[in-house]
Length: 503
Image (cartoon, rainbow, N blue to C red; front, side, top):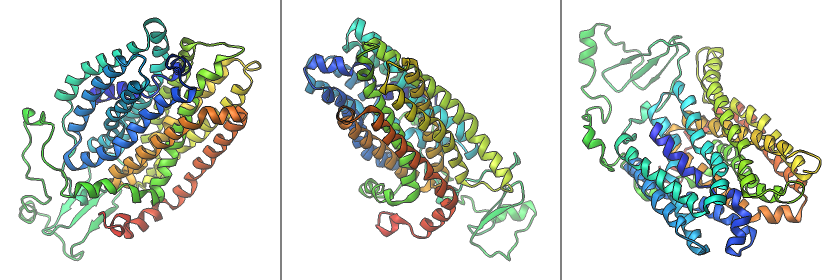
């Protein structure tokens, strides 16, 4: 996880790496400010496009080959960007391929957490991985502004290429495949109210009954009137040698684990898997997760693109170095958001489980949207008010509200990711593909319209609009919390993928 987190930091750092240099880059290439912003936008386009293909590849053949490929492409595309010089087209294509290289990390990291950890262990890990994804992205502009001013823009990318090259051996030798064939009946995650070990009783058929520490349980199939003998001898005789498919698979040696491919992990058709995410945009829970995570990420990129132009004029007259330092606030916000999410995610789930009689419900994850509503929306409203009148308000207030906005973004990203994994694990990979597509294409669209929207409207008005939109998005969590269980039941009985023949 350490090697993966470190590589993810460098991968996602490439997204806003030119944010502090938007205006100087535009002047350097003799292009419009929008063209300068699109060097960030096309990176996001590359992530969204590549992720659409990488995720089904991960489901079919595993995740390891994509992580290795992504790291190699990070090195090559960053070296390409460093050598692009004054050729805007070359730089544009290098940015697209950097987005493609970033896609495996952005698309698969949350799913890897689901592969490796139990329900009550995921909160802190999910927060850590999201901090790696977002924290590095906000720390990079702090350094990039200074590096580009002293050494030139190419060296920003040269350093990324060097560090990613150092991470490559770690990915190859210390990040094994996390995918495995898992019987669908094992995909129901149960969080016990106590630390007691779950008792599992297996009858001679495929009946499976799980009893929690409070005595509650769930059973599947079999004759309920039949009772297995309590003696060890009869229990051993009743259990088949390999009850679940894959239980007889021998453990791989370390050398075998180094192979980029270890067979297939599903018998489903690749192209069917490729198409599966698109109908899920009509699934209320998936759409909710896309909005909760994607909109605030989009507004964060929206602010990042505008930072340089907002502070360029009076009374601050900032250059690229000072604009880079402005990202200190967002980086601190990402760190605090990580701490809040890590502290609350598992604790709140356990607390609410105890209050619910020892029964865990995935909807308990939705309460993490409350900090997103408080901090994220306050940050958007505050930034819009302060940025409109910097002669009246000190620049530190704008940085402070940007910090709050990023805090809310990180907590919301953790909340939506945890809910998807816990509530819809059987379609988690497709759901994360939906999140990847939505947030990157939404953010790409914002890079097109950011400067035009602000230049033709008052900055305060624009931020009041997007802040209100975000409040409405967060309030959608109320019906999702209330009706989430019914929604899960309904779509279990009316499977979208079966209806569209993509199951």
